[in-house]
Image (cartoon, rainbow, N blue to C red; front, side, top):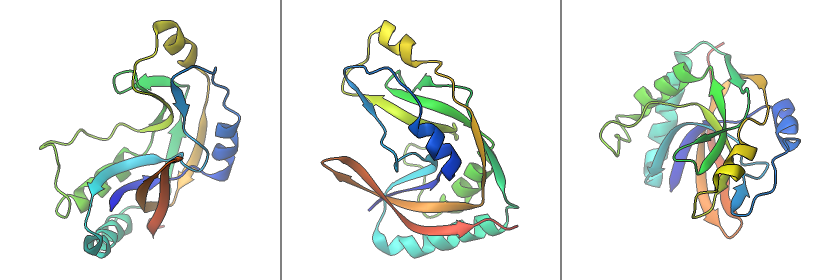
Length: 178
């Protein structure tokens, strides 16, 4: 099963994301509501029998972290990862991402021998197969968006591909210590 550890935006942030106006651009696929999240660590393909150990490891990490964490999204859209991913920067989750990484690393080692450190972001769109031209990229970058919310838990999420894109299912939720 393909899994990752994530946090989900609160309802107020989701409503505001629904109102985010991005210029229609051929070759750009918007992330649909219900799929907006912030990935703390992508774990990749993991055997299902490893899931209980991952849940325990995440529980240990969450138990040692005082919550809530304050997630700050914004100030606007920007291109990330080779100009194929349109995202909104996220701050405030570095400590949580590092705790998740440390907790899960013994179970799911870095696949690239030195996994890139967490770069907080919420993906809002991806360009299909090719890069967009400079004017299209410029029109989509810098669209104002700012929100903040409290994070009280981490979710272990399974991702399954479908004809409509990925489907995410929370396998387990672990609460942060209060």
